[in-house]
Every structure is written in structure tokens, then in C-alpha cells.
Image (tube, rainbow, N blue to C red):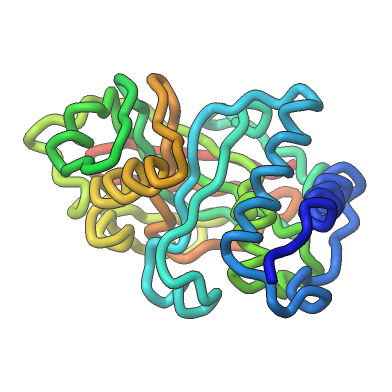
Length: 262
């Protein structure tokens, strides 16, 4: 049985309260074992509306669970997505205020900036490529508002796919000579041994993520807007982040992205 609207709003409000107080909530699936992915997206939608009502500004979409092991770990059955906010962007080389977070992690991704609106259904690879204004190496910062990262698909989706911020590297055009599936990254913490990855980790090709997203949004009467940023999914293992940590991601063809936690 679907969750009642009042329950959806209550759960969304609890996630927002956790954002404000930094006090995580118990897993929502424990209290609602029959919760569905549709319920979880309705909670996410309600959470986003609360945040927008508090003055937050949407800047794009984050796609997650673009690797099979992640889909299997959380039981998502495929990729998931959520909204990103301007208030959560940190400039390249900048600092993240750890005091505003609960249990953060960070991972490297490939990001797109939309050069124009992209509206499905039926979006093809050629359609997606034509709509891209630029491409960048990026970081996504994730932070779980559920206790001890005890999350499945419901908690992941409802909690805005645990997006807590992003950092964008230098932008370049997505020309014919750039194969994003072959872009590699060396991702290091405090100068230590790097985690290695490549664009192929994101559904085989980050452009395939963009195609999936545009068509998924169309199924939900939504679309990608001009100048929105799309994070296409983690391409190397994440690091936990703590005050004093500095992270660098060195991308082939896309330059470097750096951020510190204060």
C-alpha cells in the first residue's frame, strides 16, 4: 500500500531537520517495510519543495548507482537521480565546511553543463551530445542523513540521493576527439596512493547516463534545462572526508579538481 501523503511529508521534513541539526534519522524502511521506490521519490520531491521554500536554488541533477555493484548493494534496480542546489557548490580549490555535514564522503565524477534544454522521450545519444554545452571533471560530496549509512534504495532516493555538494573543474567542449568512456582519473586524499577510475564506470559511458536521465525525466513530466549541471555518477571509489583532508582528482583530458575540508 502506498504511503499516505501525510507520511511522505513527515518523512521529508525529518530529512530536512537532519540537514539542519546534523542529527541523523533511523532508516525509514525499518518503520515502513513496504515502502516502494515510487514512495521514495515522492519523499524526495517533498524534501526538494521544502528546501526550495527555504530559499535553496536548483542547479541540476545528480545521477547515482551507475555501477552494477552499487545497484546491487542498495537494491535500486538501476540508476537513481536527485536534485542539486547552488548553495551546495564549492569552487574548484575551495573549502567545504565539515561542521555542516554528518558523515561525508567524496568521489570523482564527470559532469555535463547543458547547452540547451533536453526533453524526452526518445532521446538518443546524438540528441544528448547535441545538447551538451560543456564537460568537466568534478567531485560529488555525499552525506547520509540516515544513521550510520544504514541505507537501502528507499533511504538513498528519499534523502535526495545523499547529495551534499559538488565541485566543478575546468570546462571544455565535448568534441569528437573526446571519448568520455576512456577518460581516466587519479583520485587522492592528502597525497596518498590514488584510487583509479575511468568514465566507463558510469553505465559504460557518461553520455549513456545523460541519455538515461533525459528519458527517465520525460517519464516523470520533467526535462533538463539549459545551463543545468548533470553529475553522471562516481567513477572511482569514494573516500571518507574529515577536517584537514585535501582531495585532488587528476583527469586525463579534463584537468584537475581539488577541494579541502575545514
